[in-house]
Length: 477
Image 1: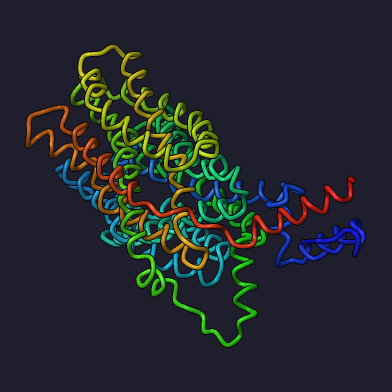
Image 2: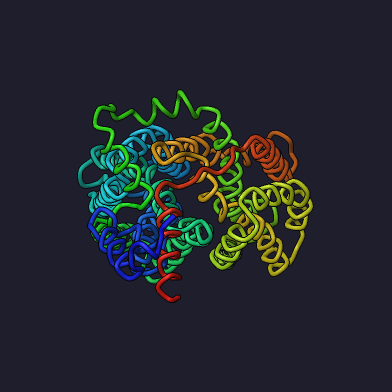
């Protein structure tokens, strides 16, 4: 307990603030004590841009797939060329668990800022270079080989983005604001998808087919590169997160203790938590891809919508996602992570099939309304998940645990969700089969939530905030 009778209050504050203003500790002062929000704002901007670039590229590649197929995989069979294009796209998902291991290790050993600075540099460089690849007609088979190589680098680097940005923001915030701030990460995903689809639609409108195939398709990739460099610039001028700084300071005092491999610690002490986190993250993986990526195809094939209306409905719903995600993030701060995730699972289990049934014979605005209800439930889950996963692992393995569980779920269940949904409809002849698949995944996530661990405390945060608050009150008195 601090005693104002022994040491004057004002010098105590000056001493404390002076200490935390040292370069290695400035983030602790800036964010946990709420004295200065500038570092938190920069952390939010840097986190947003990296994930935005990833999903802007995802949307651009998907919407321009027919053009990219003609440029890199010329063949007499357009369907085969398109299949080859998506095969390259799918391969990047296969590498995500491997990337999760690498970036998780680096993020826990070298620092969150270090890992995020390099991941965004690799991703933005690869994205930019895709826009520079000559066509098959110019350099032959080297063109698709280069495309595959750069997509592989993108997938590898992107596997550290979502987890790293979420952990970075979670460790920068106080617990009472963690949900709403980490909601920036899924919001950046939806924003990237939305602007990518708008950009692709604009390219189709303003370019002739020949000019789009020769050069127009390159523009989204060339633009995404510099955006990523802006994100890197912001990140390298940030201090590392307060929790990570506190952990490294404690470790530096134990000079005889050998630094542990985070994945060895994760395997030995937290393997149950990784499995549980995988189960919880599976709902995000499947629901996100089914409701936001696969839905335009579903509406076209099942509800009889033309592609223009299907894409317009999806764009409107993405706007709703970005709006609702922050509201739900705030509610997760108010009511708790487990409650929000349980409610989201329950609503998906109860409402998914009836809502999908409404999509088959409905008007455009009814379809938009139904999609919006599904996305509202999705944001309840997605806004809470980054904080939940961050609070599931201790600081020394937080990046690794988050990255591994999240990327495994997305590689095994998320990336395959559109394929599984299409296969289920063909195998069963039931247009509601994807809805039942989503219900099953929601049930899996709910069961995983039952075994979820108690949230861990973030190192070095609350203790310093409480001390500064106490000293401020004594000064005012």
